[in-house]
Image (cartoon, rainbow, N blue to C red; front, side, top):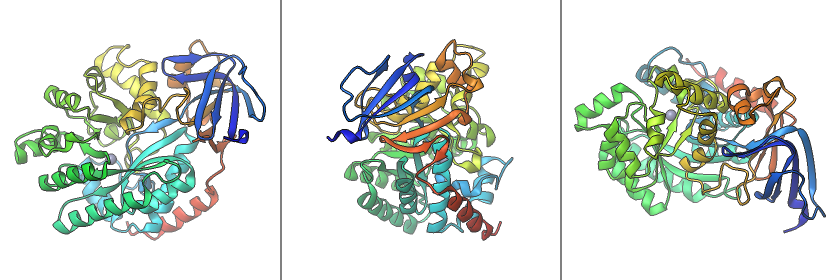
Length: 434
Ligand SMILES: [Zn+2]
């Protein structure tokens, strides 16, 4: 490959992974979209033709992975606060979502990509409507998206349409942008998708070789209703529909018992832990430590901006590290390193990426975030990773690369027209009846 695609990033500190932190001069070298080398000290290989980016007052870390969300729900930020989930969903969100258009989803998703990029997220998941527009917006933004058509199975017609849309979404978008766009299947939840439909989705997942993302056991009410209707928990219910014969990412898992956790571990079901969304909707706190202790891969997510109300993964990272300490009255419950692992490499595994993704080690995607070491959050640094988890925030992010390409440079998005996004979203939302 031609040398002009090789970039040598020289930095003042490097978090190669949660377990490998260098507090001092270090480097990351990528060739095209893939990391070729990284380490402490000065790169001592051949520098001929290398494009050198020198950022000695920055620390480089892997991009954050947002494992659960509905990107275009940025359009409904602050539209339904301080109400429980069922009210929020049926009285606030569903009526607003009736007014969505393809154009609205494009600009709502661009807004989400802007917000995520400047707060250090390089890869996110989306399950929503008009997903071709979400994919287009993601492709245009330069970010990496694990995207699924949100499937609601209230009527047979909706089920048919959802299956057809998922098929054409895969045909049109899977692996576009050199693999930055990846398609998954997105049955919304067992309470919106009847058993026969979940079985169909399972079959489609096998046929198209696509993994599945779904909301599971988000609220106590959902679990009670599942017991009433099916005589078992949502986890046991979808297992019996065959869903776990396929790779599954389960969002929330707030109300899971020991048996549910055992089922999830047996089937390698991944969990997306969304602490802020679960707190805000009064749903509860997922037993992330118990899930991890059972060997389940747990990633972190924001959920949609309408239930968070931002897409800042630094907040989730910090909250995941703090929350379980308080709940379990154990300061070692989730360490900085474990929280960082969830926000990066475990998040990548949760969203079905190959091993090594979510680190800055050779062979991984060059998805790199730089934080400003000259900011107060990094003065002093007894433990660089602790500074990132417990002190840093999105405002420390200066530069973001995805697949080796600059997305944010010196704090400014370079792939997205933020003035246009701002104008379009205000125009579109101004027309919604609320
Ligand atoms: Zn969700």
